[in-house]
Length: 113
DNA sequence: AGAATGACGCTGA
DNA sequence: TTCAGCGCCATTC
Image (tube, rainbow, N blue to C red; front, side):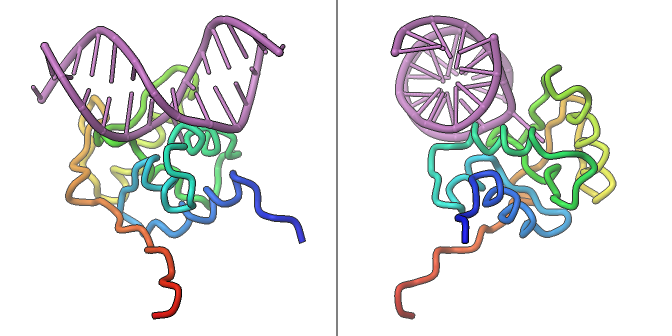
């Protein structure tokens, strides 16, 4: 068996974000045991072929804002549309009420209860 | 190998 | 609250 790659772990974790909930890059990184690797999470999502079953649009930055950049070639605006479709209000600058929709990541399994 | 880049995050002004 | 600066680290050149 081959250990899951970093990308695979990111995708598996993002898949666990429920509909109409939001997570930050840092949150996802920490949840897969890669604290401090928020940027790598962004790259992993960037490599995701679209469309995808992975709810990548539910991941935003810690400032509660969609990360807009030309390098995304429009996926940032698609992200805004997908979030609106889930009922999450997003203003023209990509800002959203992160606190009200923040996802609670699964905690590390305790050693023995 | 060394430098630049970036879908990030925290701190201080 | 907004903004600049710095730390971060895999990827890319």
